[in-house]
Image 1: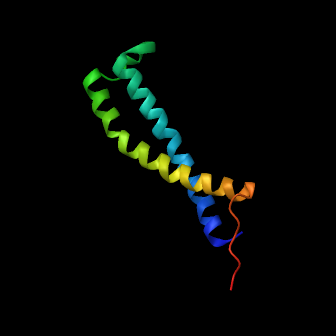
Image 2: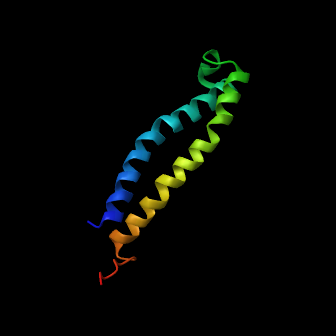
Amino acid sequence: MPRFDATCLRLVRWTGWVLIPTILAFLLTGYCISGRFGLGRWLDETTALECHKLLHAPLILLTLVHSIPAIYLAMRRWGWIRSRPTP
């Protein structure tokens, strides 16, 4: 496996593990804001909204850093991108 592909694979794996709690926190704070499922008792609306707003940038960044290498690796696996011949 070429070095760049191995780096992409490591990046996809690490960001995947970081994305899981980030997405869960994003969903949890969203439900705390709306008070659905009784989650309004965990955080008040103002605190939940502040936390929810802070999670937008990390969620977008992690999603991009996770998705772009994953798409590249999938395209390599499907044969849409071929490896360059070494000189």
